[in-house]
Length: 258
Image 1 (tube, rainbow, N blue to C red):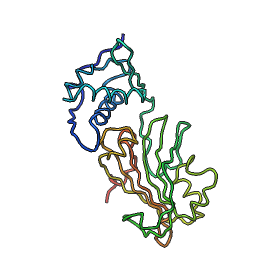
Image 2: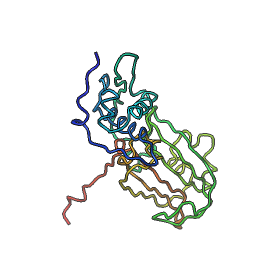
Image 3: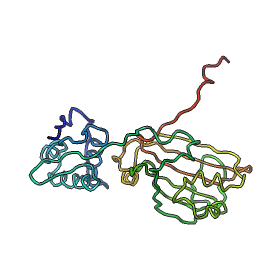
Image 4: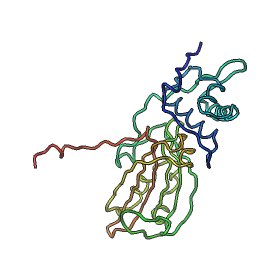
């Protein structure tokens, strides 16, 4: 017999669904997905009925059914005729953060996968307002999603100086991290590498691509590689799921006598 979940209202945060650009059932699917993946509803547990969830979130029963259908398609829950719905999701064994520092650009595992969303040749104005360096195009703009074990953890937009991009070759951005390719194909032109990290809330597109709730916390990284003249050879805007992001650094200098 599957285990029975505790009352959601007593074991998870309270969310408020509001009409807007994101449908109510998509908002609800994001909330329920978080309950599954966070372990509030563990593997094998029966989840509340459609009626109970409809009452909890003050939505129609059909809205809950549509949300549950999304989770079923993702393999997170399962339902059989005449039986209640139960959790089928098994969390990954390794829940350590995947991103630690800029030195991790070369670190991948056999479960690492890349999905390219788009590529296009763009002028320097498309970089917007980089916080460091001077844009000097044209650039190849690449949008992609990174996965680990089938789970998305990062969505990103990359601007690569076109001469460097043309050196990527057959083993390109579909198999290797772009920062590593830029490093390896820059022919010694890299002079300075810098990152800025901020914390924000996932927008609609990010929540859909990263499979996280709308407005869930995310880490945003702006990464820039400059040449000796201060021209931007590579500029990236990366968004990481909060549960797959972490930073480690040596802070020994803080305890040394002045």
